[in-house]
Length: 235
Ligand SMILES: Nc1ncnc2c1ncn2[C@@H]1O[C@H](COP(=O)(O)OP(=O)(O)OP(=O)(O)O)[C@@H](O)[C@H]1O
Ligand SMILES: [Mg+2]
Image: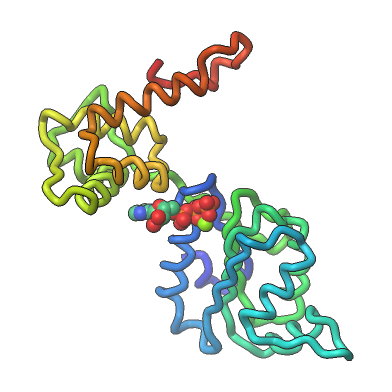
């Protein structure tokens, strides 16, 4: 609950693609919504490719309109100055050089807080980083029984999505190892687990795992000069 602290005004949720940064930001926004009396605003920056379009994107969400006299940044500062607002800037990684505008807003607007999601940190002074970690994984070498296995976050997500594709899906003694290995093979990344589990309609876990293994082998075998760290872990 870093954002609840007085001193934390800029919180950056970091992590690779598909780790759950956007999801976490929305969850935090919902939990903290009553602390920001003037509202929580979500700005999707994924389609923004140029740093100079960041301020216009924020202004659009806040319904701040351009005038001839003042720049959008000035208008935004003026409109946010006294407001207790949480601004969520989602997908900042491709326009990190716009971070200076984020700093400028924070300096001009003392009650404003900003939560950023980004694959990398912004490198500005006010920033606090929170790394969004992959989901908890079982150790396939010491496989627990299906009930305990199902409690690992990664496995729980796999089961939930597999059941959405195929309502009778269950983890059994027969498929537990394959389910665990799929999750490990996908590094506990929620997006990858969801995509894999969605294929459960047609493929049982063992077949799914075999395909994942083959894909990884295709990606990493062949070239002699591929450093060992890129070799698939299960090879
Ligand atoms: N803890 C979790 N439990 C269940 N589902 C999750 C969890 N974390 C993430 N997901 C799901 O994984 C998918 C990817 O999450 P999300 O879009 O938040 O990732 P991201 O880090 O924002 O990715 P990107 O860097 O590509 O924007 C979403 O469908 C999300 O609902
Ligand atoms: Mg995202």
